[in-house]
Amino acid sequence: MAVLSFALPARAQIPPEWQAAAQVVIGEFERDSPKMAAYPWSSELRQGWSLARAWRQHNNGNTEIILAEYLTFTALCRAPGCAGSTIEGQPYVAVAQRVKALHAEQGGPYSLATNAHAWLAGLADPTGAAQKNAALWNKDLDVAAADFATGNLYALAWLLARTRPTPAEQAMTFSRFALLVQGRAWLGARCVDITKIATVLDAPPKVESCS
Image (tube, rainbow, N blue to C red):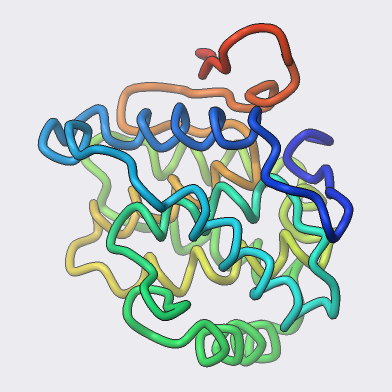
């Protein structure tokens, strides 16, 4: 999972392989939404970079973001948008405070990950992906919880997922955002692997299959 946790120097520009990876991964999310998939890319890649660095600065006191942070905030800037440094319409600082409160409520990142997985497993997901993901991710809680940055992303994923109106939408939202931390996930009937998404510099990024 090193690729998703790899940090860049604070003054670095967006690596081209990260931008390409973001488009491919988010494109995987949009496979079942032809209207969104056809929507042209514009400023999301730059906005996601800026929002990820602002989030990191607020939470960690530095701007050395990891790939998982870039993918998460670029996805949020793609849809529903992040104008004014917002996360689903709320100032990112306010959302960061909710993340901090959730950690305190859950008793820390390991308890949070365990409880999030239990919640996910209990959702009525007609595809069965929620239960598969909960079982898969419970095998190694370190992936989500050992690092402060990934722990915050996991809490953010849970907060966002719980706002969705139906269990199926909750499961899909959590699974998509957790994938960006975990590297592997079931999205409906597809098992996708993004652990090598930005490691090959001389070839286009590719989402791989898993089982």
